[in-house]
Amino acid sequence: MAEPIGYMARSRNYYAAQGFEKAYQWAHFDEVPFAPLAKPLADSRLGIVTTAATYARTTRDDRAVDSGSTIDPPERLFGDDLSWDKKATHLDDRESYLPLVQLEKAVVGGRIGSLSPRFYCAPTSYSQRETLTEDGPAILKLCREDEVDVAMLVPL
Amino acid sequence: MSLVARVLEDAGIPTVILGSAIDIVEHCGVPRFLFTDFPLGNPCGAPWDRDMQRAILGQALDLFEQADGPRTTVRAPFAWDGDRWRDQYMEIRPEDREELIRKGEENRKARAAKRSRQT
Image (cartoon, rainbow over all chains, first blue to last red; front, side, top):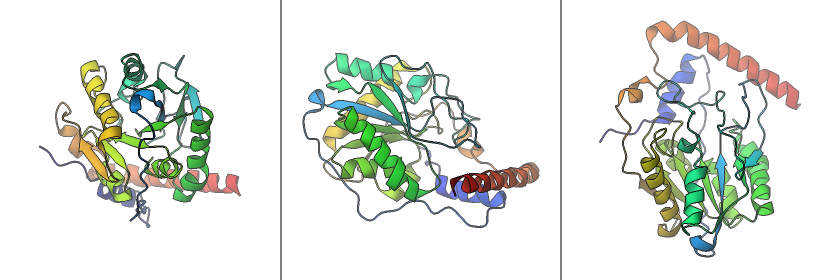
C-alpha cells in the first residue's frame, strides 16, 4: 500500500517556491476534546459541514460561513478557490464530497434519526484564531438552530 | 475543519471528519477521523461510484459509535484508480518556477487587499 501524501511538507515546499518566506504553522493541540454520543445514532439528527461553497467563489472573494438546503439541495457546490487536486479529479459529482443522497438513504434505513434541513459551509480561513473564535462558533449556532446531535465534517 | 471539530465537540456535539489529508488532521488532533487515501476533493468516494460512496459513508457513521476516545483514526479500505496523482500534486517542475513566483506575488497582493478590507 502506498504511503499517504505528506501534505504539510508538500505545501511548505510549494509556497516556498512561490516566494513565501514564512512557512504556515499548522494547528496542533496536545489535548483533544471528545464528546460521547448522547443518544443512539438511530435517534440522532446529523448535520454535515463542507468546505465547498454554494456559489462560484474566486481567491479574491471574502469567505464566510454559509448554509444550503438538504431538502432541495443544489446539484453541485464549488471550490475553485480552494486547494484540492484539480489535476486528478473534479467536483462534478456532489456525492463525492457532500453525500446527501447516501445520508437520506441512511435515514430511510434507520441508521440515523434524521438529517439536518441545512448543510453548512465552513470557510477555510488562513487564520486559526478566526476559525476558532468566529467561524466555528457561527457553525455551532446554525447546528443549534437545527437541533443537530452529531456532525460529519467533510473537507475537500 | 479540524478546528471546527474542536468547537463542536467542546459544545457537546460528537463529530467525525471524513477526509484525505491524514498528516494535517492528525497533527491537529481530532476526535474521530475516517481517512480515505484519495486525491483531495472527493473524500466520500470516487465520483459516480455509488457502491464505494455508500460503504465509506457507512464506515463514517460506524465511527460515531466505535470510537471510545479522541484521536481515533480508521482507514477506509479503498484505493484510487492509479497512483500518478501522488507525485503530481503540488509538483514543482523546473519549468514551473517562474509561474510559481508570479502566482505567489498575486497571492500576496490578494492577502494584502483582504487585510486592508478588514481593518
